[in-house]
Image (cartoon, rainbow, N blue to C red; front, side, top):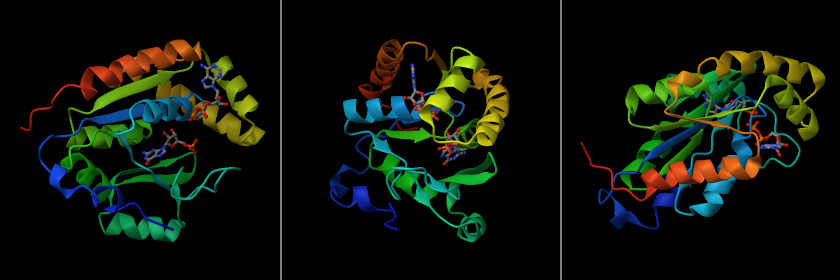
Length: 209
Ligand code: ADP
Ligand code: 5GP
């Protein structure tokens, strides 16, 4: 496993403190479209830094360690809870997921905007420490559409899809916690809306308080 701590920051130490980075958080129920939309954002704004999460779930076909997630063992994850490694962590659909505190802090201190793709529980924890995070919730047009998209994606079993749909209802009920909500019906329209939200903050200096 090639961990991300310090990697992206080593090449440009002079950047430190000249600008405070914005923290963007994207959440959606599983199948809602956050991976698709996050990739568009990262391609469009190539200086936004993506926080690769850690998880104890198994990789899906095509997922790469260190790119999509850091895939680690449950024991390792729990040890890192004790050592304060996580900026936030949560159990989602029976697996652990977490964000490295060091990676997040270094990224923001170096002036880079950062993008987190995390669930509602994680968002609440991050807002505790970074209350001015720009939170964006991606809503599916309906639960039925969500089910179809999960089936079409073909990465989960029927049982897993059922479980994810149950969690989806609870997550969607909490969309009011987010500053922006995008209903992901037509993909091109969602992309346009998301880019215009990101642009609004990305090109604006953030004052260091
Ligand atoms: P998440 O990361 O939130 O679990 P994904 O980005 O993997 O969701 O999207 C789930 C599936 O739905 C993928 O197969 C993706 O291509 C598809 N999808 C995403 N947004 C749309 C959309 N607006 N219209 C149709 N299909 C979509
Ligand atoms: P998936 O297994 O489909 O990739 O992700 C399942 C859920 O876990 C999604 O809601 C996703 O946003 C969330 N998730 C991914 N990474 C993290 C993380 O680091 N922290 C938290 N709290 N949730 C995460």
